Image 1: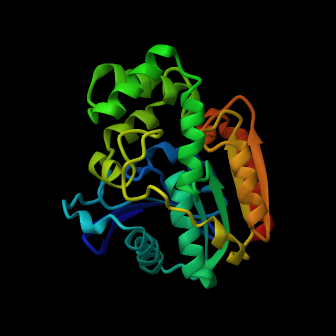
Image 2 (image 1 turned 180 degrees about the vertical axis):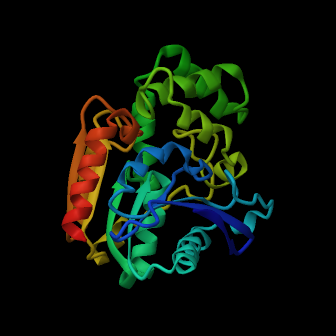
Image 3 (image 1 turned 90 degrees about the vertical axis):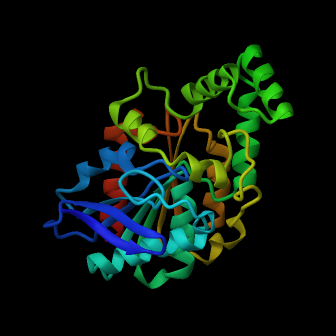
Length: 286
């Protein structure tokens, strides 16, 4: 089942897999900002147990793409989730957020705790300050050529040069998705990306933060979230195991899993291990 729901600024596209399943629905929140749902497609493996909801946030993928920058606010993205939940008639949900989606999941949990059964937070980024710091540290492990290209771009403010884009690709290949070649679902997500949203909210790359999210940090509020939480990351994740462990200690009721030989897209790099970890967690918290 797929359709659209009206949200502030336009229409939001969604799809429900396993709509006839009896379990508590799992609503997935993609990353970015502005990278649509496609790369989360492995989560459809859970549809035999519960409805799995995918959607594209406003500004990317199959959803409308308004040009009004005032729409690109965390609070409005959180309201998208609540409007979608109401549209689908779910009284209770599990949330699974990936990367930027973990911010929206936590902000939703803080505002609407009564509807939330549990959360899975993969490649967590609840502190952009920490995320940026980790990315800057990892950036220094790149080739000398890439480091020099990044330095030149950040001094000049011109991030369009080929050598900067090659540096970004080297970083992504080490810390975002280590699969060669990238799976088709990743390519589809890149093709459907809302670059205006990403650039405005975050910046030109994972390690160069210039957008309105710079300095965002909700980690001091995580202690208010009482729902069970599963935190996951990859061994080589830009959302590092050390920072993920930092978040785990902030939650009252959280567990953590690190996937070896994988990175930010560990749900694609280790799909069966990841799905089994999520499946068992959801089953325990239903």
